[in-house]
Length: 426
Image 1 (cartoon, rainbow, N blue to C red):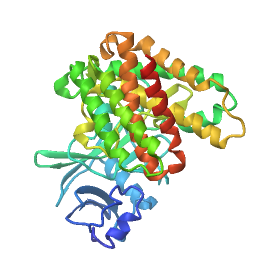
Image 2: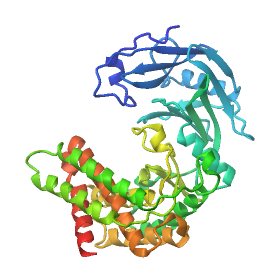
Image 3: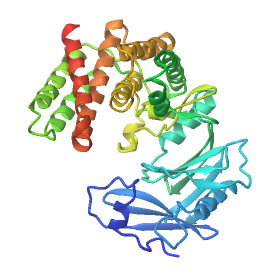
Image 4: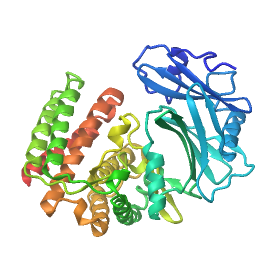
């Protein structure tokens, strides 16, 4: 068995989960651990990143083979601890979890990670890009379980690498939410035909997010949770980041769109003005990548999933305390994309005024249950901080759409125009 059989830069570039598309670096150091039963877990260094491969030895990675997937889950079932060149891998089940003889199969759709369906009760998420430290998905779900928080999938197990004083999360087992739909798909299906139902559901969702933020504000700062002081320095840091990002993104905008570059310049100035004397309130751990696609809708209502944060960002950054309203801003921007998608694809367009009603319903639901300490001390401050955090998202969206989907660029540009105009009118 060899962890490097067939492993090349070309092979890596063909994998959807490979984040280093811009690099031509060949795979470097490879550290493999024989997990048993013909299964090998390897960590491969490529261009400054580290990737996890799970193989039967015949291919660089065979996790899409049900036999390999079954062997990985068997190691978890048996709670093995195995040592090899990479260090020690420990497979662990959460208290009260017992995984018997069940069918294991790849879910098929891969993005930055790979997921396995374990029977009809669990999902095993295998982290492909591995970073030193505890992954927020494991850390947050474990903490929320201790807090007895609802609206998240129960943590059922995990496996992690230990190498001396260092550790890294390799995978997380979560309880499957039964009969649940993806939140993005649910919204696109219901918005054209039952708009009021979606507005009512968003009001409920606002309360769900506020409840989870209250739970995340608990615990001790030393343990990675609790609250830390934000205040004016936190607001200024957000504004400075927006100005820097806007300048960087403007350089990538096509030369035939000078109005977009001008709008990005205006966004930087608007952010600086909004942050002046703005108190952000207390900071907490947040989801960090919240949008409709990170939600499930089931019989019990909303469930918030994918707590690892934005995978492209460094792990230390994803684990920092941030304004709770950052999650709110992410969800609000997702609503704008839902409307735009329906308008482009559905036979029936959403009712006029839906977006304003949907935003108001979600915000009302959130503010009704939000901890005041996690917000600016005044209604004006809440408005300004939320606008600031939406600007942050909008600048990112402009850069993304300019690079990947130019036909969608007008969506964030319209959002920038509205945010800047709203700031002038305030």
